[in-house]
Image (tube, rainbow, N blue to C red):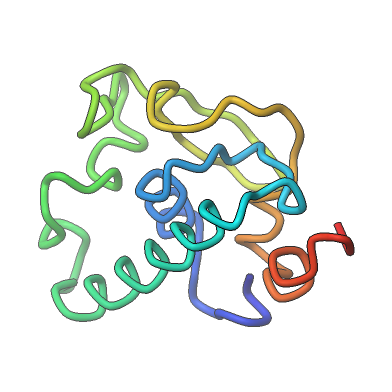
Length: 127
C-alpha cells in the first residue's frame, strides 16, 4: 500500500482493517466486493480524520480508536472490550480483536496494506 498510499503505517493499517472488520490474515484476492468497499471507506475515514485531528502525538485521536489500546499490555478492543491479539503477519506487527474480524487464514491483506494495494485489491487474480 505504500506505493499507492504512502504514509499508511502499522497503526493506520490496523485501524483501517479493524474498522472494515477485515482480518489481517485474509488473502487480498479473497476479499468480497463488500469487504473491498468497506476497506476503501475505512481507509478514507482514517486518513481524513487523522489529518484533521491528530496533534503532536496520538493522544488527540478519539479514545474509541484502536491505537490507544494496540500495544498496551492487556489492551482491549474499543468495540468489544476483549483483549487484543498480536502477531507478525506479512512482515509487520499487528494487533486485532478476534471478535471484530473475519477468521480466514492466510496472509496477504497486511502485505497489501504495506505495499501493493493496486495489484492485489483491484486485480484479485494477481494475488
